[in-house]
Each structure stands twice: as C-alpha cells, then as structure tokens.
Length: 213
Image (cartoon, rainbow, N blue to C red; front, side):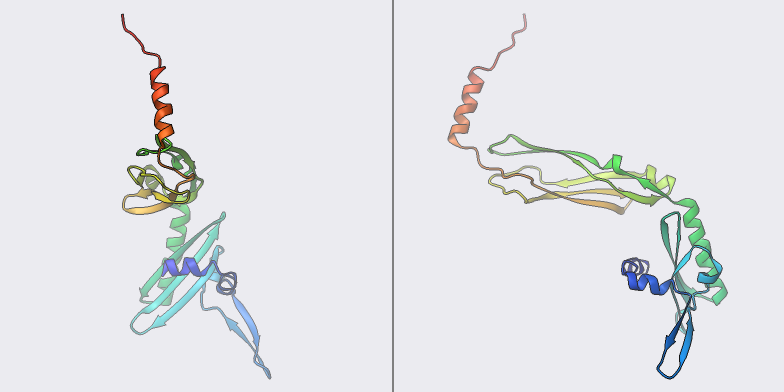
C-alpha cells in the first residue's frame, strides 16, 4: 500500500485531492460541501494525505502522509480497532520518521571504477570512472551499513557495439536495494587486426629492458 501510494502521489491531481480538507461541489440544482475523513489534515500540521478506509473485515485503515523540511513520509495503518487509534498510530509513525531519518547525500559512495579485460580487441581493457548523485532518507545505523555490489561481465569479446549492456552496480543495506545503475559500453570495440599485432610486435622490439646489476 505504501508503494502504491508513493507512485500515486507523483500525479499532481491525486496529490492535490488527498491534501484537500473540504470541497464544495455543484450538483446542478444544489451544492454540497464534502469533508475529507482524514482527521490528520486538521489535527497534524505536517499532514498532507492520503486516504481512510473501512470494511467489517479490514477494520479501520489509514494511509497517511506528512511533509516536513522537504522530506515526505508515508504511514500505513491496517486493522485498527478504533478511528482514534488509527490516527494516533499514524501520527506516531510519521513523527518517529522525522526524528530518526535524515536525508543523506550518498554520492561519495557512488564513485565507481570498472576495468574489464578485452579479449583480442583493439584495446587491452575497458576502463571507466563512473560517478552518480543521490540523496535518500536514512537512519545513522542504515548509513553505516551501506555496501556496493557490482555485477558486470568478466570480459569483453569483440566485436561489441556502443550501447551494449555490461551489467549493473547496486547499493544495499542488508538485503534491501537502495540504488541501481545499469552500465553500458560507451564506445565500439572491434577485433584486433593483423596490423595491430604487427604494431604491437614493433613496440615490443624497442621496449627498454631493465637490467639489475
């Protein structure tokens, strides 16, 4: 429910609707004021959504959101016994989120160097420095546990065209993936030609040889 809500809030019309406390609508011959059943919009200063719900089987439910200092969090309450409990629990979760989480820049962790050997190609190896920028809300403990994982091809067999996918680089906290980047070849790599072997042989002939006395 939290993931669905996160996606839905990218729609500006949904985003505006769920934050509306009340709305007067015209039904032709008469008008009616509709009040949002999400009491947090009127009792919690940072609340800006989202939706209440109730069935006999599900009991009192609530998806709530709140924004403070440009950070927005979503709380999901399912199966609450009373309406009062669902709003109180949602506020507690949102407040705890603001207190525990900080938006952190993890860009320094996203500086990668890749070096993939090329078999009988016009270059010996494919080398690149890759940088990326990302900020996400994390607790102090989560930030300390971030680790990087590379899943790239072990070698390149030419010919291989620019744009070929070489693999992925991930950032994890435990089993949770918090970042993913697809890596693609940025140049065409061709097979080594006869002339390339000849040039390399010439270079080897005139390569300085160090002697130890």
